[in-house]
Image (tube, rainbow, N blue to C red; front, side, top):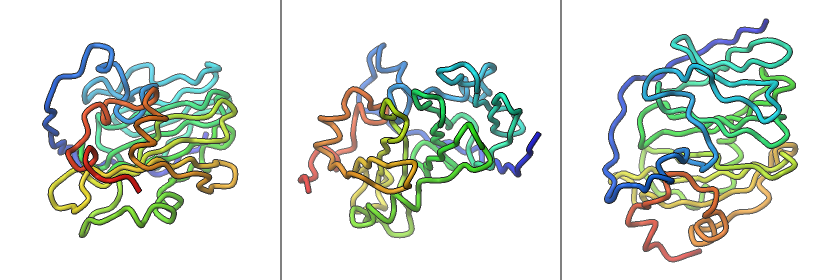
Length: 223
């Protein structure tokens, strides 16, 4: 059984004020992706975790860290997170799971890690891939982009993520979003989508975070 170092972030979770309540259906969506599932029930670890489509693997949290269990055993995932702010969206083939976690609060910083079930110790962050491709959308002194996974293609070769300028007042482009289509095999961005394209083409897979967007995201001219 492999064990890797785990680091837990602070327990401070700032609140984001939402202008209107979500409807009952939307309240069941994940934070970033509609099909994403939280690894927590409130601040407590979700007892059964999030099970892969083939039911052979499970990603789950405990008070000691974040883990994945496969047919080969259990692996501790070296991911920094705040309890209550972690969700998973499985690839349809169960070959990968995308974990989106915040190491601060609801505002961020959010990161996405891709975990291959064949070798969970080979997990990787998509941050380098995203920032290299989307650095031109970013205007925020001293802050870094939030990144969240929202879904997969049917073959599990493509993961769809959103890069978001942190939605608070220190950022000139606060709340601006862009979609990126990442090939997990080559670890390259195959396509970028502006805000309008994200809201139109990905509307059926977006999570609660994008039900009500900050003013900047509603008014920013499309690139």
